[in-house]
Length: 478
Ligand code: HEM
Image 1 (tube, rainbow, N blue to C red):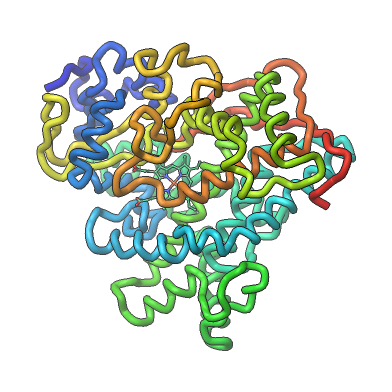
Image 2 (tube, rainbow, N blue to C red):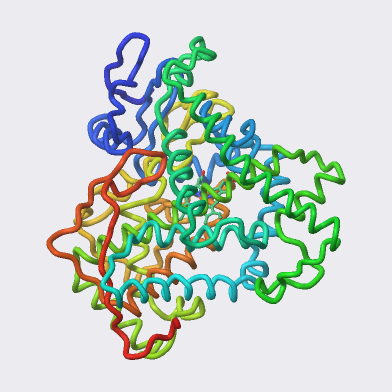
């Protein structure tokens, strides 16, 4: 057994989690090592804080670690824990993963939707422009959240339930945050199965209520889609805008059709998938752009270097497009540096060990939960020189990527359960951040506060609200 902190009777190590578990666990692993057994009430866990054991888990023994523990709140919110994010590794998960890949995230599918993403980002830039000429400030996180909401929504169901800036979109951001908070909130019923049913902290009650609110939205989406399908067959009338082929359906249409053909898919699986995409795809991406802007505002010379690069590559009177991304290596380095210091899921989404396994000489027993602390790995002085310094140039001229093969940089996880939305997230973070920098000047008085807030995702405690001024002579976004 690897060394672990002294535990208390019954609660084990729960008292050591603190308000920001990724930070408390990172500090403890400095004393107890990179493979640290941890007792969460009655549940066995192990915390991994270094690239070598992470590689063993995600590569050498990936199959054994390909399920996840499902917190009770997540089970309620995901319609029973059978969605892509939470399903146990096996036939059902493979079906959902394959469907999501072919219908949403294959290169072909993503390419066919590019025109639409471009339009969505232009709309965002135009709205920031309008605010900027009025001298109004912009809430970066909320603005990028709405952009991602529009993009995910269009990919998933090809129409709009949420209008930009309307009440439902604003409400939805709050709801997504609540889901992430609830799913990450330590819940006594998870740690002590004999307390199940008592719901002492009211977590499940709150999860149930939240799910009902989502359910109203999803039911409306599905109702509309079914009506379309009845009236027009599978023809997607929005093909002009979405760039899809005329006979193709969208993701929701395909799921509903498969459900009809009894492929083992039920309505709650379809709704669980909608929940996954809206939760996993929106706040993660907008938080990354928000952290990036916060770091750049605190490092104006880095921001200036990125803008010089964008001006050189794109030109002064053109919009940034996804096709520019391979030609802006410094912007790419900034994104890597932001994901190193501020990974949107600092403990990833935990995995579950399905049979005894030896990692670097330590036995990890069956049913142990595995928390890979990528936040700690990103700040480990044994891995990075001057790790707390925001210095994108450390990536310039290296082949280091965040795609699951370099175990020192794993913001999207790795192995067969690596984030399926990574290609989309990567394009969007580069495109939105690049566009914000290319088109506007950004300044703040004093330092931006970088305090983190608790949740399953890493959020800024204080939202970044800044005034922009247009920086290019023409406004290519209007
Ligand atoms: C910066 C943005 C994002 C980050 C940092 C991120 C991070 C992650 C991480 C760490 C995991 C768990 C991986 C593992 O267990 O190894 C994950 C899973 C997942 N992500 Fe993302 N994600 C992002 C954006 C997105 C987007 C845009 C979507 C979709 C629209 C998405 C959909 C998913 C799904 C469905 C899973 C579950 C995959 C499975 O269990 O098979 N994510 N993500």
